[in-house]
Amino acid sequence: SFYHKNQVVKISDINSRFKEGEKVMLSSLLKAGLIDTIKAPVKILGGGGLQVKNLEFIGVQASKSAQEQIKKAGGVIK
Image (cartoon, rainbow, N blue to C red):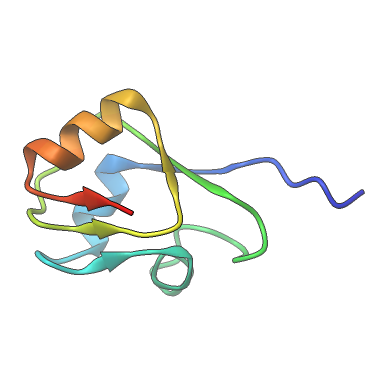
């Protein structure tokens, strides 16, 4: 089947692999080793608190708690 379940990435993993102002998207998550493929959707989950400021999340879904942490840290979800 062509159905792919979400690849899950935790906010705490974003902290250790991204720097302020970077773009968090499928290609950069793959390069960081946080996902296995760019062909399946990605969901960012909260937990641990986002410490990296001004990140731009592109083409990924985020849980409600992750969205709140991203906005609190000055980030945006596109």
